[in-house]
Image (cartoon, rainbow, N blue to C red; front, side):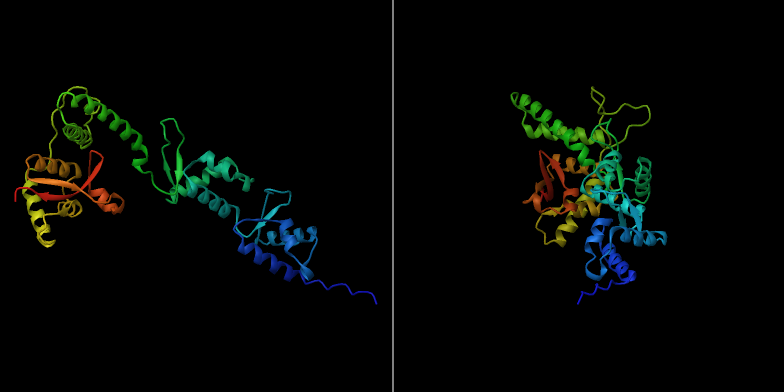
Amino acid sequence: MPKRAAQLAPDSAVLDAMRSVLDASPEPIAVSKLKSILKGPLRRGEAEVVALLEAERSAGRVFRYAPYSGKSPRYGRQSPEVYARQLALAALARKAQTLRDVEQSVGKRLKDYTAADWKRLVEQLVAEKAVFPAPGPTARSAVRYSLHPPDPRDYLRSVVARWRRNLDQIAGRLADFGIPSTEVTAAALEMLGDAVGRRPASGEASPLADSGPSPRQPGAPADFASRFDAAFARIDRQRGSHNFVSLVELRRALADVARADFDQGMRDLRMAGRYELSGAESLGGLRPEEREAAILEAGNLLLYVSRRDR
């Protein structure tokens, strides 16, 4: 007896199978791949698969995309706008990129998107604060975008490294004349604090651009020393009177004092021989708030304060 032809499943079952696959995929899927997963009674020719998908597209339930790695068109459940957003965010999660970088790195997956479309999308992401613009590594570099606001440290590392090399050279020259390197470092940090502790007024030359001596800027408030003494004594008592208090707690106790003024007052108290600073035992174990509160000196983060005139 002749074999009976296998009964085909209804089109609704084929559509259910394809919808299930499309729902689970973050990427649009090529027609050739969709056709290959239809087995047994669900099997259909490519033209039939395309016809079913196009009917879904007309109903607004799927979206068609240009081919990517092959010749078959692709279909997905997400709209081109949603897909483009996913592609852009995934690219920027890997590393900061320029607008052109984004277009080149993911544009092949969405060939229907123009440069203007990518620009409009990134601007929208910036407006939503999902993406943040940042200057490039040089003044002539294009703006870069990432998922995080720009970190000043990324732009200051090379500047600080050059400053450190110059400082070491000067310290080496002065060492031949009996000036210890610690004194050179202390002087440099004091001058740097004066330079960045205030913004020059309109028409006033920047301290960094002035090659001649500049008057010393106002330091900590006049009552800083007495307030610092009181805060130190109180926190030290609360911690068991071990004469070992973190700058985190001291800065918190004097939160109304600007950081530059606090650091200047701390320098004055140390120069007067009243307090000393020591570093943490393990820099790798410092919490972010401890790193922020610490004072950088000669490459060391100084975090703990002890009183000397006890």
